[in-house]
Image (tube, rainbow over all chains, first blue to last red; front, side):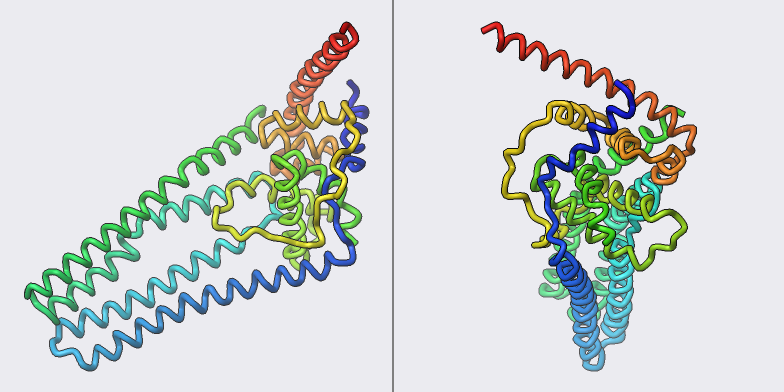
Length: 195
Length: 165
């Protein structure tokens, strides 16, 4: 079969289109959809920052009524950790939106793989950038506030259990990305083959 | 309008990456949205065609890696045609079937070749050298022709069987 014959068969496909565009509505739809996406991104960031500010205000108020220095230190560290986590979440999520579809396929595959690896590393290291920065100040605050009283011990155990649960859920999620990363790496290899 | 001029190309390419019509519609919607989003940043470093093919193929290839929680786009202006029982052109069906059986990266290269793009432009879109693309196309075409011959033989056998009855 000649190249031209193949190309003709391929280009005759439009007669069999299943998808139709309504030219009059498409412009309107696109603008609306982009506005919706922009709004949802804006609200997501506002929500995350809002929760962070709420926690900072809550712990900030407690800071002034705290009795011991240890409790104050714990609260201060919680506020700093909250600021750090907000920054981390917002920057990572924003980088997800800046995927450039106008680059070459090879670059796009590399970009996708790097993005998934970044997400995976974020999940793998959640202990260091999310759980420990919050749990350690909470422990310090709890020791300063309740000491090793029965309530204090229960409080510490609850923090430990909750942290472990969060860690476990994240590690499970991280593993789910493995097959996607492998698939993309296979595709990069396929693309580079035949040279 | 850019989309109007290229809608057939976008449809053809999305069709080989979609599992069904619904899937194809979602892909077309994603492609259109991405063209729209990226249009202001188009820098004329590549031709508008190259840029458009890049977006279409990248969106199609990337679609399955998007997180499950990704919000699905629903544009009312892009819809399934009311009449789906179109007459079947066997040659196109065979070609479509054989392309669908190729590896995903090979699929992207062969559809660009079938769209009549020069090797240099395909190389720009894919991110390989023109020579590398030429070697790949030669191999993919061979694979495609074997598949097409096989499909044709099967089709002729089917006709013979029907006439024999």
